[in-house]
Length: 246
Ligand code: ADP
Ligand code: MG
Image 1 (cartoon, rainbow, N blue to C red):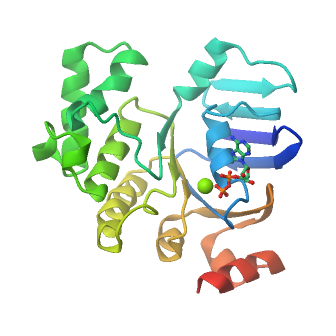
Image 2: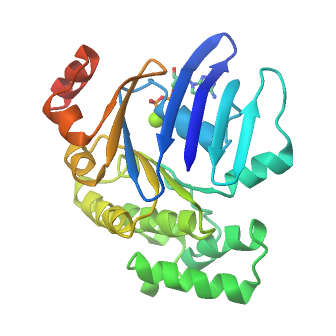
């Protein structure tokens, strides 16, 4: 359903992704772990084409792009791939001048051409789902980090994406606000949403992931079910990384 083949990304002469191959079945949760600077964010950004990959291919549902070095992908293909994904950022990135409700309406109107009434109705459902129906008219600065991130999740879901991408969704939060965000993500996993989550919350990863990939220096060094990665990692690099966290 989601297939990435031999994906590479360089910034100038610096190779950041060096041939990523992965598959993700519909309804499954993939957690990405790995040290800082290993290319985790770049991988997510390449999947929704916030960054243009240097070479390799990305296919999500019916949308796909074969990237060629030096060749700009067609805008229509970029938009069609981007429409398959919803992204949740570490620093929320809500529109500061829009209310919670408007933040969740915006993409529906611009990307899906829904009417305002349709977008508003769907946005209200999603705010309800993340437990923030009563904050519809609040602006981001009036909300806690945990609330802002839950709005971020509602916004990511608002275009009905096939794949939800989470880039360290709780890393910017005070410790007491982490759980309210993880709870929402856990519920999405239970509903069978297809998700790819970069996180350092290892307890959460173990519980929510169907599979885990460990990335180091732009390469997948190990891939497997959580029991393997956490219980008996095969690669020295994975052992080292996990031992630093524990
Ligand atoms: P991670 O999310 O695993 O911490 P990133 O994907 O953010 O890692 O970054 C991987 C590497 O790519 C880092 O060395 C980073 O400096 C580099 N990098 C990321 N984005 C850019 C960019 N826009 N221009 C140049 N280098 C970048
Ligand atoms: Mg990152």
